[in-house]
Length: 504
View 1: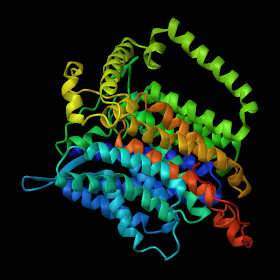
View 2: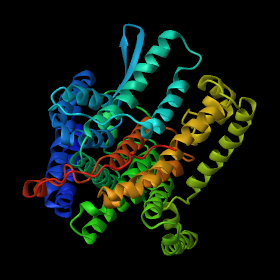
View 3: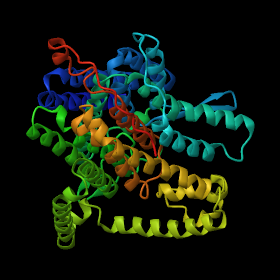
View 4: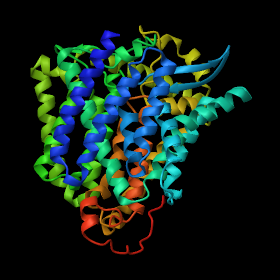
């Protein structure tokens, strides 16, 4: 219990420290977001400090209800809590009957649904073709979980997917009905990036895996996958898995990169980006850096067009070449940047997994095979940790749902990228500025990372929620619900009708 209290206090203090920087960097109208982030962090971790898992999760649900009852901040606070809370999951049972897996994300979702009944009535955002990529991805994951099983398991999987993917997407989409809610949600994502980064930096330098204590207190002793590299701990982050936490942080980094117009100045924006970049370094995962770079290239491509990318790509090539050269002459740098012997062994495992996986996909190309069958055929690839680690998300989708499922999953990400790129001019015309480039950046970031990480539930959910945000940028006029300080001082002009971006 003492370890839990110490961990909670440290996380809350770190959140307060980094949010003070956030408050000083954003425009005055948005300072309340930093304050709300600290309060939500404190309340959530106090709830998780309760010793019994049912009590702790019930308390966490109540925390979500209290903080999400204001509609304008609902989407942002829901995303903030989903991203920053430790990944704790248990399976609810009714006697010997297995029900559904309950997670911290599920508690936030249920709290948000209850809070939605308290919102001031107003029209939420409607579903459109812009939501089709998200639904394609949800369908593939539901098919994989439910295939070749009993009717009761199909019902259980339907409830599970609804609770873990559809309902969070629904609540975020329902709440971002004006520009103030959209900007608030984007800034809460920035706050999430800072909160995760602060803990990751502390974890790395103190060699103290902060989040693992919360899982251990409930008797959930899953693999933390936290190791030392170059004399520093690979920070496990809220998912207690460096590559997956790096993927979360990369998605948040790209969102922060696109949100430059919400900061007081370019220098303040760079300071925030630098903190998140140090957080990514502390996680020591090449996957995170790859996603962050790909996403930022997407933002710049959307902002400048193809001809404007010559100078940024040249600078990026020089930087990457210099970093790689450093790893060749400095062993500690090689360890810290993911070019160690441990990383090379990981690459060998990935190669073996890929070769075997491609063989199996060739044998069952249309809809693949159930996970249990695939696992039985790949027993010789079971690791010392006792698992077959499907580290290539796209390959896993192809194995479990065939090329049909892969086309839907990868096609959903590609469709989101194309739709966002096409909508950028409409978004700018509506007054969104830099946020017009968010959608392409997020899609390229996620698309670049899935060859190196599995389709983890929280990573996929975060990607889908950011898809919803980028779609809102394309469909909501920026002049409605502008910064509260300005809105009190000047009347809101009637927006000019503009076409809503749709997936081609």
